[in-house]
Image (cartoon, rainbow over all chains, first blue to last red; front, side, top):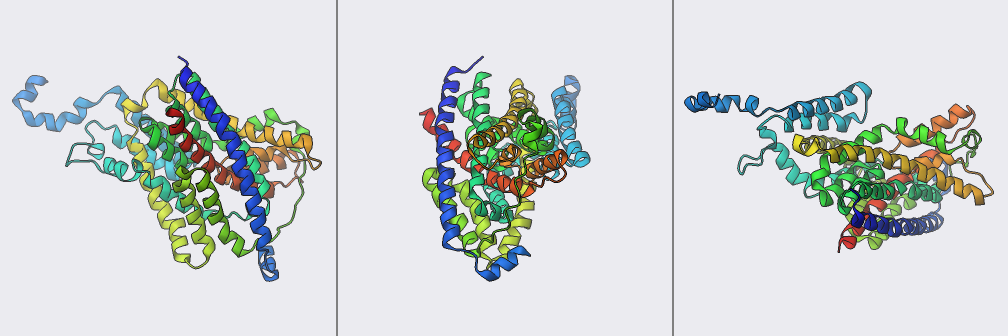
Length: 51
Length: 385
């Protein structure tokens, strides 16, 4: 019943994809923070957002 | 009857529907009727389940002209399948529409919420392992796992590439379980958290303004990063972010509105009925499909558990405690998951408003699910070599 070859590949996929995804997400987080910092909202937009 | 048909050949033409009818066709009519019932009566993803249900009925009328594959007599559902699913066009167009509807502002304010969304993709990989354990080959197991992305277009995109035969059941499972988030998530959340944890207040951190320039550059930046990591994901992430760029550019309001309304409605309609058209009895009434439906539920449970357990893990090290329930919102079912979790928090403590955090994590789930889909797309062919 169990597909041994598929099981090994699925585990391999999990082992590669999960850490890679966290790494990509960390890059996203860093880049988004930098972007947000580089282009802060001007004072007038602040008022609009609060609305 | 055969003698009668031999004597009057035109009878065959008139009676071919009756003569070709089997119990399997009738069961599929009931499946179609069930999907239509869930859409109409219970409002379960009606824009998808209603067309899928009717498409399933059309596909299961013996000798149906709607799904005919006879050269020069191709049925419209077959033509739509070839023109929109087999070449992955419809999922990509849907992503443009979703992108135009998305507001990534909460995500830009608190990008760290993307970590919960990443953890909530655990179900994809756990389910792929589970599917291998019950005998599916790797590319099918990975495609079944992608139900855990809780993202219909990603599921269809991956399935149309690596599990064409399972496309119908995979799409039905993805959309059905997405509509069942309010049923699936609460018991898992309750099982994995204590009452005290569910009462943790996260406070209102304020609506820090995000500049229009940041909102405009965000989709371009995400596309470039994701594209460099997994070029195969560019169609998915690129179309999602293109839709968002239309919205955030502020100069093509007509195009943005068209993507959010006309494009979304038209492609959803065509996608639904075409998926339904793939649900022929011989493909759908199999033990494999039963397993896929069961594994789909497993995927959503593991997604929810992954997000919650990650939040609990962070709580071990963080001085500021996080309500672990928000980890469950990392799935892509937006905004349903965020709302369900926010309601749960209010039920535990009527003064605990975590909707702001829950929706932020839920928006991040949209991005994380596409990233996970891209990685699966990249890894299936790589691991098959």
